[in-house]
Image 1 (tube, rainbow, N blue to C red):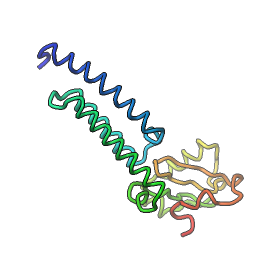
Image 2 (tube, helix red, strand yellow; image 1 turned 180 degrees about the vertical axis):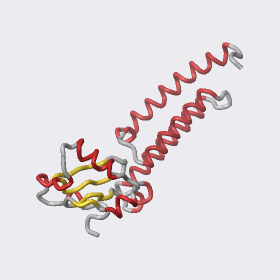
Image 3 (cartoon, rainbow, N blue to C red; image 1 turned 30 degrees about the horizontal axis):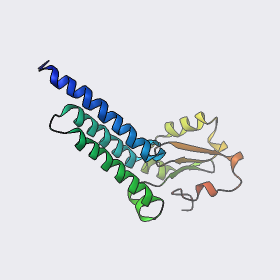
Image 4 (cartoon, rainbow, N blue to C red; image 1 turned 180 degrees about the horizontal axis):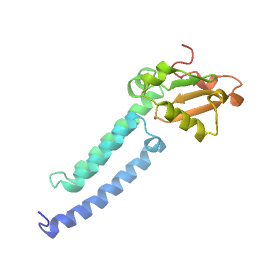
Length: 171
């Protein structure tokens, strides 16, 4: 079907604009953490928010107030989880993975690379992007909780305190 009537189109435009404004307002109230680089937990919240927005826009069975309540619930749950994550040790272990050491002191850690399903090409690309031409120049490559790579050069290492929470550093 291509067209039912103008009522559905006007409803979509009006409710869509109001739902979008409500989502922007709630995300702004929630703070910068809502917009941070995504880990698995953040991705789930973002997909849920997008799905909720689509449902509000396209389903006449869902009232705007119900959709805004769903936005508030999802963002409120994210705020609660992140609040508990910085105040307990249990919650972060449930919602985030640990960063993982993939290269240490110029040596690739094959078991960690395999376990994290990372290719050597991805590691080499991360090193090149940071200006390193050789694995021997690199003190550490870390796969971060958001899927990005951190590369630490030998020249930058005075002590290894930045690695203290990285899986595989003291193993």
